[in-house]
Amino acid sequence: MPRLSAREVAKRLHKLCFKKERQKGSHLTLGRSTGEKVTVPVHGDRELSRGVVKQIINLLEDRFNYTRSEAIEFLRTGIPSKVDCPLDS
Image (cartoon, rainbow, N blue to C red; front, side, top):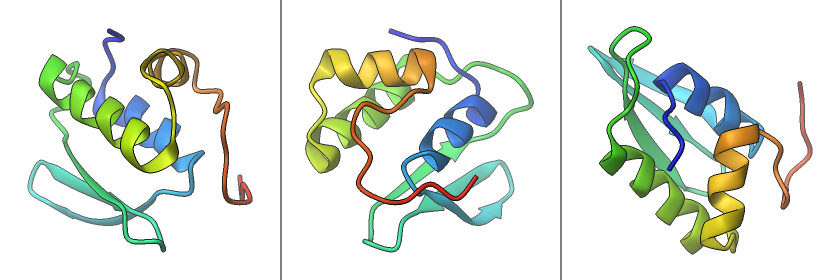
């Protein structure tokens, strides 16, 4: 299971067209125009808990048809194997 900070997760999810919707306190909410949302706790550069990373992996499996190994590899490398929207830097 990859160990990532909230900043790293946000950068990776941006590649799947997630945009910052809002931040309230230490919770960053990212969303897509198709309705998917994920809330990530931001505590400096601290690593996210295994539970939060697992929730993101489950989102990738359920909504983006990634296998578990593809989702973990995407989080490790930041290179999406399946992209269903145009990338805009």
